[in-house]
Structure formats: C-alpha cells, structure tokens
Length: 377
Image (tube, rainbow, N blue to C red; front, side):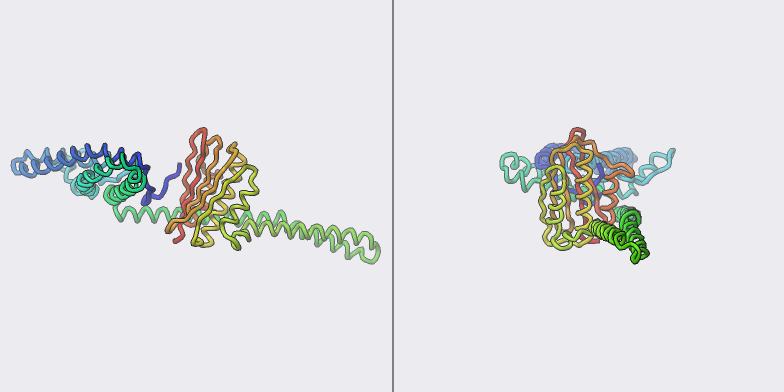
C-alpha cells in the first residue's frame, strides 16, 4: 500500500473515534498525574540531588508516552504520523549527559506540550463520545470531525517540525519532478516509436506506390489504377493511425466535454461493466483532467487483463484543492506497486503533477486504487 501525504489525513471512522476517545481518557489521567507529579517533585528536590533521577525518569516517560501516542493516533484516527527522529547521543555517554541531550531535543518538549494539551481535551471528548453512543447524528457527523481536529493537533505537535516538513516536501517534490521527467521521456519515446512503426511506414508505402504509378502512367494504365487504389488505402490507414495517436496524446472528447463524458466513453469500451460517477465542478485544470483520464484508462485495462473482476466502479470528485479519483473492482486482489509495473507507471503519471496513488488490495479483493491530484502546484 502506498502512503498518503504525511501532512494530510482523512476523517477517521466514527466507531474508532468513539473507542479512541473513551479508552484514551484513562491514559490521559495517568499521564497527566505522573508527569505533573514527577516534574513537581523532581524540581522541588533537585537541590538535594534526589530530584535528578525523578526528572530523568519523567523525561523518559514523556518520550515513551509520545511514541505510544503516535502509534495510537495512526491506528485509531488514521493520522499519517511518520516515525519520530530524535536528537542522537553517543553511546557510552554519562547518564546525566544523555538527559541533557534529551532536554535539548525539541521533540521532547513537543511531546510534553501534546500530553498536557490532550488531558483537558480528553475531558471534553469523553462527554462527546458517550453522547455519541446514544445520539446517532452526533456519532456520524460531530465525532469524526472532532477526531480529525485531534489528529491535526497530533500532526502539529507529534509530527515533524516545520523545518523537517519543508525538507520532506522538498524531497518529495524533487522525486516527483524526476519521475515526471522520466514519464515524459517514456511518453516521447512511445510517440516516436508509434510514428516510426505506424504512420511513417504507411506514408512511405503511399510514396512508393505513387512513384511506381508515375513510372507506369503511360505504359500500363490498369496497373496505375491498382497502385493508386493501394496508395489511397495506405493513406487512409495512415490518417487513422495519426488520429489514434493524437487521441492517445490528448483525447478530443476530454477537451470538448470534460471528464464525465471522457470517462463514460472509456467505460463503454471496457469488456466488464463499469459504473461511473463524476462530480468535479468547477472544472479542474487540463493537466489534472488528462492525468485522471489516463489513470482511469490504464487502470481499467489492467482490471480487464489481470484482476478477474466481473464489475468495476469509477468515482471522481473534487475537494477544495484536489481531484480525487477512486477505481474499485471485485477481482481477486493482491495488486501492489512493483518497480516497472503498471501501478508504478500510474504513480509516475500522478507524480508529474505532485499527485499521490494509494493502493489497497488485500488477497481475495476488493481492490481500491485512489489518486489524489492537486489542482494547484
């Protein structure tokens, strides 16, 4: 499964959010009491050296709790928190020196900020979670949004700091640009190969037939007629191949009528039934439309060839700044992104506009392929 962007996350499932809010309340109380007590006692007794082991143990507990919270948020609220990168210390350093390194690590203080902010928030969440068990509308609409907001707090305090996020974004952009250049070069070679092997050969045959007809024009008029008919047929085939090639570069129906009509035309050509739902108003940029069109087309082709599915579905919708493409099928599953494979090609195509491909395909199916395509770069 490919991962979504580390700075965005979807709304969590209502049931998971309710369980998270209820269970985490117990841990919040324990964390708050132990941390506040440990800090208070440790600072108060530091003058007689007794407080230093207490502060050291409290610092370790804060960091351990922060790591547990990251895993808890990833599991229950679907927050894509990456593993934390803490400030390293040298092996064999004295215990007091290690503690100083931990205190100078910004992630330690961010862990503490999150744990202190989470306690009063947990008190509010507990009441909402208990009410959501009884009130279905609150469970469906209010609780997931509150869980999403909690995830945003987790991303802000437990995720990478701003400098690290910018570094990661720069690395992703550099990688996506490189993949985009490779994809464009592969497309250029494909077009060149199709022209050389297709239309160019047809036009060469036309030129040869017309040359032979010219040489026989006075001596054998009947042969000239046959040669002209042959040249005419080759010319029509060349035009047809050029039309197909142009459609493969940018389909006319997509430019004229948009994604809905273009994807419906693709679905009509599929050997298995495909249900299409498109809602992308206002119309996205042409680059996004083209990427979405070819992702759907290549995915439907792969489904027909390899999945063993009897039906498929295509849903495309627009958020404020993204177009989301989701293709599902009821095949045997087991699809994964492999270097040089079809799904890797989809990821490369999406990467040309900084898009992200997510593949969920357990053994036995169903398979869900989702593309999140930004409308701004």
